[in-house]
Each structure stands twice: as C-alpha cells, then as structure tokens.
Amino acid sequence: IAFIYYFMGFVGYLPLKEAMEHSREAATKAIQINPENSQAILASSIITWLYDFEWDKGKKMLEKSISLNPNMPFAYGMLGSYYYMMLDKTKAIECMNAARRIDPLGGFTNGMFAELYNTMGEFEKALAICDEILQLDPSNGYLMLGRITAMGFINGWDSVIPKIEESRAKYGEFPILMSLLGMGYALAGQTGKAEEVIRWFEETEAQQEGVLLDQVGVVKAHLGRKDEFFKKLEESIAHHSINLLWFYKSKMLPEDISKDERFIKARKALGLPV
Image 1 (cartoon, rainbow, N blue to C red):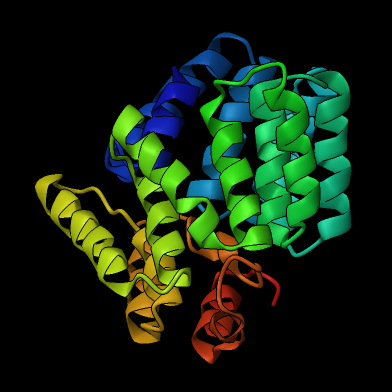
Image 2: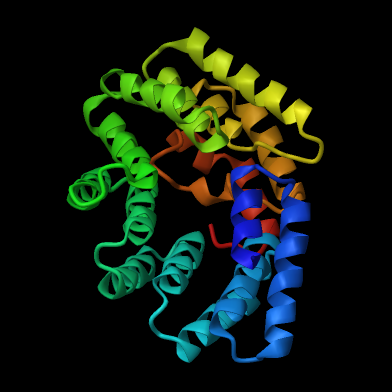
C-alpha cells in the first residue's frame, strides 16, 4: 500500500502531500508490526529522502533495507537514484547494475536503468537496454517511453513524435507522457504544439486541488522560458517534489539551465552537491 500511494503522488494522480502521508502511515504501521520488514523500511526510506529531503537518513534506511533483504532490485534502483541526486554517477550505475543482476529481464528494473542513462545523456546505452527487454515484453510502456526518449535525442524528435502521439491516443493523457510530448515538440521546433501541451498542464493542474504538475517545467525550459522554469522549480521544491531537481546537469535540459545560479542556489539550500 505504501508503494502504491508513493507512485500515485509521484505521477500526479494524488496531491503529493496526501499521497506521502498515506504512504508514511502504511509504512510506519508495517514497521511497528515487524521492525525488520525490509519492504516497509524501503518504503519509509523513499519518503525520507524523496519527500522529506533528509538525504543521509534516507540513504541509511535504504542500505538497511538492502542488508535485511539483498534481493530487492527496486531497493538498489532507488539507491542508484539517490547517488545520481548526489552527482555520483559511478555509484549510481553500480547500484543499477546490482538491481539488474537480481532481475535481469524485469521491465521495471530495466526501465529505471534506461531512465537513468537517458537522464545522464547516455542515450545509446538507454536504447540498448530498452531494445533488449522490449523483445521480451513489447507492450511495456515504461520501456517504450525510455526508448522514444533515447531515439529522440539520437535521431531527432521529428522521428519519434508520431510514436508519442500514438501513445497519447492509445493510453490517454498523463503528466509523464505529456511532458515528453511537449519536450519533443519544443526540440522539433513545433512551438505552437508545445504551447498547447503547456496549456494542458495548466488546465489539468487547475482542475485538481493540491496537485502540482511540475513536469511542465521541462517543456518550458526547452522553449527558452527560463524564468518560468525556475518559478516552477520553486513551486516543486515547496511541494517537496524532486521531479525538477532530478534534472540538474542532465542532458535532458538545456545546458544553461543547470549553470544558472538559481538552480545552484536551490540545490545548495537543500544540502545537495553542485
């Protein structure tokens, strides 16, 4: 239950605060019943570092969950994500490889690895992972989005926009997909369509009290609307979301965004390396 609420908040189906409160409650109850419940400690660790911004405490809890059960690929994946936030790409990849050794064919495990590679700008490596696992699980949406992202940066966004639009028609509109579509439009020079995606975000956010769809910041960044990106970053941090913090020094954002003093200042204020 704790994991379900976490994902609902992360993707924007519930207000993040509400989702994390329910997730925390479920994880706490499970730990009270069994203080060595590795899954509950893992869930609690995610809340601690991803939402509470208690980086060191969250890392120690992640490590404890792994020591109690070293066969949880998601735990290694989350530890890899932690290291990426700390700008330690080597350890991040080591953790993702550890997850993959446990779960070599898992769609979600490999999707996390592909997402990390895309964020790092290692698009060929992300593509290789997606292609390998999609042969076994061709309908895996996580991997399909990872593949589209890699192909967009490798071959140009005009080549993959039809695939994103097809996914939109098939699966509906949701923030992660719409952010990818808006970014694709912006990078392909289809400014009008990118602006339509931004309006979708703004209208959808207005209809859901307490929900912050900060993924729109990526679209605004690629349209050169830096001030609006940083306004959304401020809102994101105020809501205790790492969705935009995650892209610091990422190849998926324009380089001048990460070099901007506002991004550096925001990370320093949270105790993150720059």
